[in-house]
Every structure is written in structure tokens, then in C-alpha cells.
Image (cartoon, rainbow, N blue to C red; front, side, top):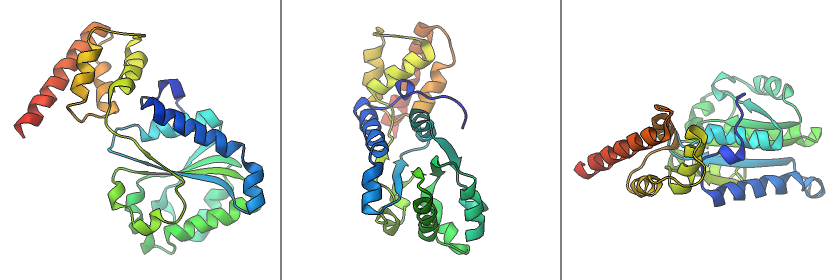
Length: 234
């Protein structure tokens, strides 16, 4: 993940965005507290929601904000604790470790370790090295995650990334079309977004089809109306 995503460009609810920033800031300034209570200086997040709702871009935005490195931990490539240790040794002491599609983790239990055991190893290594680490789990299907795993205390903050709505759409319009402030079609589009379930990725793709803001937004209105009509026919 090398592309830049700034918080101002992240198409999500303003209040949700501010809550995440506040949580990250609190994590950074509480080093003494973690040391005092004898816990690893780490924070866990669960990002969940339909595919295309911005989980990957949120990870990058968090990393850029913190100036942390990002490591994708591919569980399918790990066959033993030794493999895990080798992967962890290469990580810097200010890292975000991403474990994607955690709802599929049961497949890992057929190997020589369980996911809970894997996380315990990470805790031991990080607590002894004075690392400040963030673990981010992602899932398209939160309901499929083993409840026992959710109760492990690994995920301090659950972040639901849902379908696109009004204020997040305006950020996309600014990012892709350079529209600052109001546009006559915004209210109509925002009304349609309340009726249909469409992800930021799908709307972004629509906006990229024409550089003229008026033409692009008119096409988006047509697209959303067709979605609404199809929904009514179901």
C-alpha cells in the first residue's frame, strides 16, 4: 500500500472520522499508561462492512496519519510459529499489521497454530521490544466471525463502513470532480443515496467516467435512479 490517502479525502461520515482520529491520538499519548499496567503498547481495530466500502483506504489513511508502516499478514502463507516469528522480525517498531478477511480465520486452525495463539505470540514479542503497534482486522461479513474471537479483547474499536451517504458523497465529488461547496444536483443525489445501497467504490467509478462535473453528476443521477427502479421491482 503505497498510495497516499489523507483524512480529508476519506469518504466516510464526519463524526466517525473524528472518533477514529481521537482514538489514534489517545493511543499515541498513553505510552506511560500501557507500561504502568504491564500491557503491550498496541491497539486493535475491526473494520467491517460490504466489499468496496473503503476498508483498505482507511488503513492507508490511518498509517499516513500516524506515519506508521503497513504490513499485510497473509495467514494462508504461515505454516508454523517459526514462519510467524520470521515475518514479525522484519516489522518496524511503529507498525500497522493488517489481517484481512478475519471471518475466514477458521481455515487457519487446520494448520499448526490457532489465530488466538498467533496473536499471543505477537503480544509477547511486542511487549518485550517496547513496540507501539496497531493490529487491524477486516471483514466483509462480521456475523461470520467466531464470537469467541470477538471476545478476546483484540479489537478495541469496531468500525462499521457502510454504504455511501450524503456527506461522504460530497467528499468523493471533491476528490474526483474538484467540486468545492454546493452543486445543484447534490440534493437529488443525496436523496437517491438514502434509497439505494451503493458503495463508495461504485460511485467513485461512476464519477471517473467524465471529467465534466455536470455531465458526471447527471450520469450518476441516472445510474442511481436505475438502481432505485431495480430495487422496487424486486
